[in-house]
Length: 218
Image (cartoon, rainbow, N blue to C red; front, top):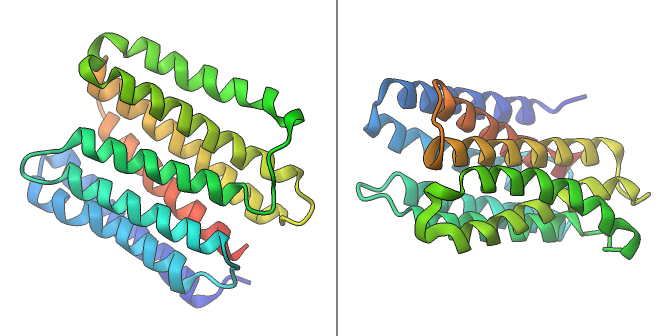
């Protein structure tokens, strides 16, 4: 049975994310600048204190990754956006998520072939957006490698008998949504924006963070 505190946590994230998405759709920059980091901050608080149970070091890694994501969100809503610095913050966040998903699930050589689908999917989007990347090309290639490895490690957790199926499913769904969010962001910013892209990106981003946070208690 889901704890009342967890239900409150999910509702708070959904409400704050809804306000942020509406602000983005309306072009309300002050509202977006307030609700975007606030939503991630709520997810961070939930992972740290509301979602129970949860063991170390998995919870610690997840909280640290959320803190890095929050710093990336803040860099994106500054009056003078710092996209390069935000990209670095999210890259570090994915490295920490990668470490979290390797807790209790050590890397084995037999798992390496399963990295290929993640690299191909993320690499294909990066290749499509390549012309628009400019000076960020090297940084984006590093990001593609990192987020692919993060998704791969989330998928490989299912092979560890000590990891519960619910926690595995939540973390994997979150990783997949994170990859999808970043794919939409790449298309929106660097190649072919489409109507509703920003809103879709944000919805997938917070759904990803929420599911990963909930995996702490599963």
